[in-house]
Length: 167
Image 1 (cartoon, helix red, strand yellow):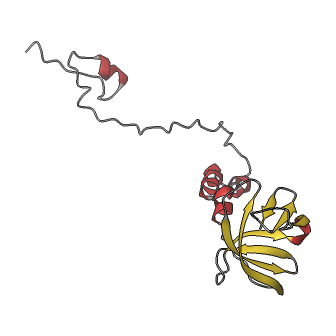
Image 2 (image 1 turned 180 degrees about the horizontal axis):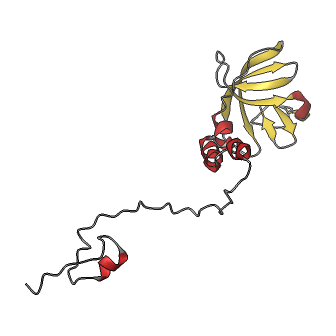
Image 3 (image 1 turned 135 degrees about the vertical axis):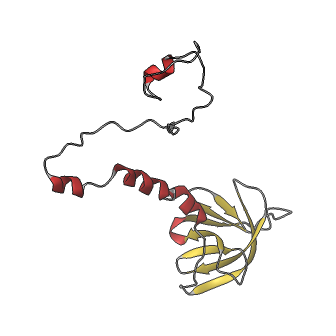
């Protein structure tokens, strides 16, 4: 009976862990939840003499939740569907094969020339378009003469600030 002894220290206190030779750490359940890895915000004073001031404050978590629920602007811009309604009077339209000075790959689009711009559509029926060239951005239109070349790669060039379109 020498091994039995009475413990007068309350169970679960700091002194209880140091008393006795039996290791019962495997039997104890963890009592604290895991803390997030993100650094915490600086502490702010919560004492206020004015109760209305306390009631008018919004909890700091509201700002974080509102910020995380917003869609990044880049995703909104990328998801914008390029559609155009034919509002202006169409002057000319038709299928054209074109390429640029930056990309030599030939592309085929349905072009519409209206009073304000040239719009390259993906097809002749839909409203989804590939590119729009405002007439105000066109610097020069150069017609290629067939007598100078044996094989024509294009009939005319449209020059803008950023590139040349060969049609």
